[in-house]
Figure (tube, rainbow, N blue to C red):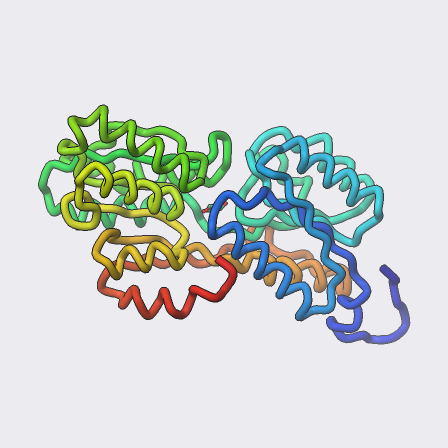
Amino acid sequence: ASAVSGTLFSVGAQAADMTIGFSQIGSESGWRAAETTVSKAEAKKRNINFKIADAQQKQENQIKAIRSFVAQGVDAIFLAPVVATGWDSVLKEAKEAKIPVVLLDRDIDPAGKDLYLTAVTSDSVHEGKVAGEWLVKTAAGKPCNVVELQGTVGASVATNRKKGFEDGIAGASNVKIVRSQTGDFTRAKGKEVMESFIKAEGGGKNICAVYAHNDDMMVGAIQAMKEAGLKPGTEVLTVSIDAVPDIFKAMAAGEANATVELTPNMAGPAFDAVIAFKEKGTVPPKWIQTESKLYTQADNPMAVYEAKKDLGY
Ligand code: AHR
C-alpha cells in the first residue's frame, strides 16, 4: 500500500491501494456466511484488496492468520474473535508492526482494549435482554420453564447474550431457565441438544419456551421439537438472535415467534473507520455499535424472508 503525500486524495483513491486481511471464524451459521459475503461486497465497493482467512472455528488458526497478515505487511487486520481470551501476544505483534486491528462482531477481554483500533459489534447484552423482555411480556405472568441453547463457550456474544437474557427475566419469578447448554451456534448441535432437553423434560411437556443465542440453533431445535410431536411457535415459544431468512420462514409458518436482528454488515463501518484513520488520522470511537431490532410474527415475516433470502445467508 502506498502513502501519497502532498495531494488531497479521495477515500476511494487511497482505499484502492489498501490491502486488508480478515481472520474470519468459519461458517458455523447462516449469519456468518452472510457476514463473509457482505464483507467481500463492501471491500469491492471501496476497491480494497481483501484477503479472508477461514479459521474453521479454531483460535490457533486465527492466530496463524494474523501472523501471516503481519508478515505480509497488510494495511489493517479485521478479526472476528472466536473466543474472548488469548489474543494478547498476537495483537501485540500487530501493534508493534503498526498494523491497526479492528474487531468484528465479537469482543475480546477488556484488558486487551489498547491492542485494537475499534470494535464494530452490536450490544450483545442488550440483544439477550430484548429477548428476555419479549418472553416475560409474552408469557404474561404464566409459569414458564425456559431451555437455553448457548453459543460457543468462551465467545463474548455467548457470555453476553446469556447475561442479557437473565437480566431481561430477572423481575419475573414465573420465568425460569431450567436447562442451559452450548449448541456451538450450529443447526446440528442445536437440534442434538434440544433432543436431550426434550428427553430430560418429560418429552418436552415441561418446556414453555426455547431461547437460543442464534437462529441456526433455533432452526435445529424447531426440527427436534417437531420430530418429538411438539408444536414450536404455539405450545413452545421461541426467541433467538440474528434474523436469518430461515427463521422468518419458520415465523411465517407459525413455528417460531421472535428474533433479534444482528446486521451482517460489520465490515462496511470497519472499512470506513480504517480509511479515515489511514487517510486523515481520524481515530474512531472504541466501539462502533450496530443496531439490534426485534422482529415477531406481527412483522410480516414472509416479506422479510423474501427481502433477505438472496443476501448471502
Ligand atoms: O458473533 C456473532 C454470532 O456468531 C452470530 O449471532 C452467530 O450466528 C454466529 O455464529
